[in-house]
Length: 64
Image (tube, rainbow, N blue to C red; front, top):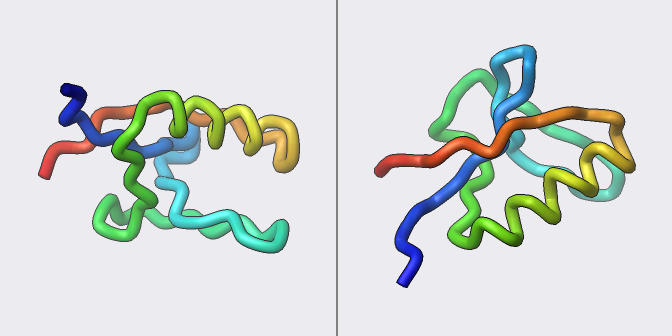
């Protein structure tokens, strides 16, 4: 069972908070970050951000 959680982190040291209606929200606070409980979902979201926003992110482990 995969119990890891993941966040998307940009080169500008910001976390992805949401992407809704083509509006991207970023924050410097990890407490506001969008948390993925599935690695494959995080990868898919990352790919979508590259395609739609030209935004490169890393997938980082989130620790509660």
